[in-house]
Image (spheres, rainbow, N blue to C red):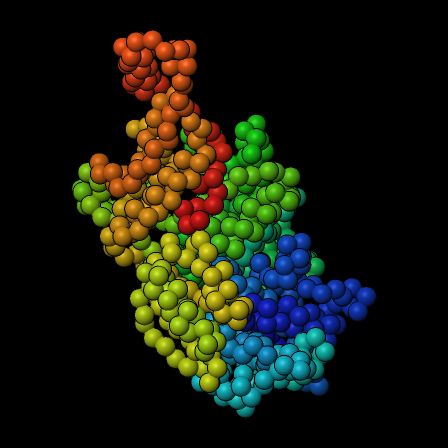
Length: 601
């Protein structure tokens, strides 16, 4: 049975034709008919189809008949954007092989390199595929040369296909069978199955996507989650073809799903091992998994109308059931009221979640500027994590602040090298290496603080390279830098919502930008209002909002000068008293002008 099973995934850079190739494989194997066919069959989310990208990994089982019998091909289609690289790692852990797809007209891109390295490190059998060979702009020889130079894949190993036109699909299926090894595992051993994804169903509870490594899992079995130790009874097992099809059992090497009336998605950990309830926890060896996705970009989500706080809470809870990779916890802002501090894998992930909340749950949201996670070394030696500047303690308790550093790979046209290098250096990047990919493109490697990338780095890169630059990044860890927490004071009172963290060399410039914005937004009062940016007790920037002037001399038509002086002194005393007891009302629009666009504007 195992000898006729092949488990493989499709990995590539975004928009290199993964979903189109998956569509063509489904048609060729008869998994779907021409009548059922539609573009991006495995992308069942509206946002995926509108944007033309894959957000969630999808699994499907195909049957392929050869002269020596029928084979079962389990395919996992993966996303290509850097934000969803955790989905790729899940797919790689459940497969023995990978189709590495490269666009013939664009060549090797940043995410191609990253996915190839992941597949090699996972020990997968790699089949290089040159896609879109039918395009007039196809540069097949150059793409093959780049694959050999950067990835070490020989040109004679590569297959040439056009997923759109159906060219080269049969040789590709033959290569999957001949060049990808069948799954290992012991059919007679106790059950061990890897969870590589999950989703929530209103009727069946959490549905776990699994790869059976050892033994078999049947309807009615009692199973245990190795991580939590909780036990359940299996109510349904099956495979995706591509719609769910129930089966009596899943055996060693097969990919499918299991439902066990699990009502809390947090009880199903991605990368966990499912074992039999009878297995001894002390002797059971869990399957080698991968690190759980950790949010790195944070922002606040607030309802535009405060009465919609509870609907927003219910919407986040429902969305979390189908995407457990983001986090949320309630917070209260003096500017925006009650809302949630949410954590995401990256900027695109943040954009997708916000759009799904607005579209699927009919909410109107206010989103604050994104921030990253900082580590703070306290004076007592402990280390705390802070997801916003407001969580960072004052300088008397914090010894140092550490920021996340990423290793950034950029592939850019030769004529854009100078502009991209300047962009990286302006963002406090540290040069690591440079490698030429042929005569017209170069791969740059930099070490860059994540905080310098979360605003507009990708947009600037696309602008400087006229849309031809690509990037990929991996988190390297946290590094101590000369970072400071900057507080914004309005009439001597700290506005917590406007505090931010930045490098000391940038503190004055960014603080002054915020003060200039606030000066335009806060209405004038009858007394002077001081706007200040401060690091601890040191003021680094100041702007004043001049008072409204009332002409107290307007009723004086001539007369002695002493009367005019008396009126001016009385006005001066009144303003002094008003300044000491007066309250400055900062309108919500003033906070939004800074919070929604960030300090970089």
